[in-house]
Image 1 (cartoon, rainbow, N blue to C red):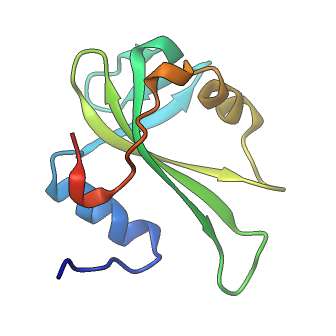
Image 2 (image 1 turned 180 degrees about the horizontal axis):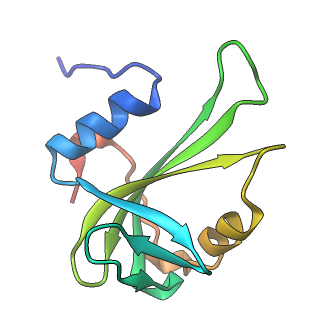
Length: 113
């Protein structure tokens, strides 16, 4: 029987880090920047391995999406994007611009590629 994860962003991030997705990304000046190398990735250089949506337990307006990312040069990590009333609209548009072919069909944390 596989272990089920709690519905908490930090627990998912921790689990992905254990599976090699340890890099951090920031959205800056229209690009997704890997914090260590400072390389600014464009949408066509990003693949979405998985994504998870969250709604706050105590505040339904506290919403976010955890993106699990693999770059064209094989850097793996995560990015947490707020959405709803507090959304960073520019970052949300960036993720909409990632080509559909770059989104994996499988979002099961236990079957990462």
